[in-house]
Image 1 (spheres, rainbow, N blue to C red):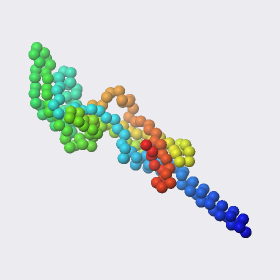
Image 2: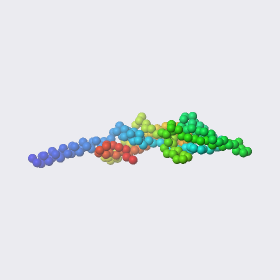
Image 3: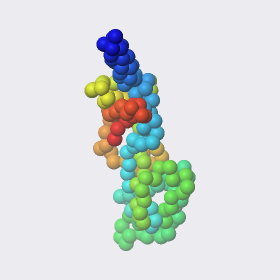
Image 4: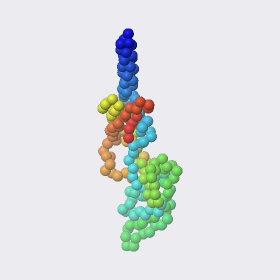
Length: 189
């Protein structure tokens, strides 16, 4: 009799263990949801440095940069005040000194700033749900999820370096997910 009770209890424990293991399965929907929530907390972006305060521009050499600042001014991200204009002696070139200030509208794009430079977001990558997700399980409690992120320009995109993968409007990124008994599947850093 005690042998049958032992076998029955062993069978119950084995069934409970198998049911607990089934929660460790990961679906595409769960992986996409976890990656999406991770990207909301830790956005992916490209950045560039932007000078502000007293900034000097040469009429010929810095014409493109001055034009970019003027576009930012028209969009309301910076204010520009001409402090000094100086024509170089015996030259067709002029030097302009502007006082450039960042406005409140630029706050969401500023990552870091010091006295003369601000690091701003030039491109923001958003999760493309339509491309789906590829999930590869690499053990009982680990999985890798590969997603497509589409690249969106910000107003500061003209300040981006030209060599940073500008040939594609998307990128593929792989995230590692780990299973925690308390929290379930989460993206690990």
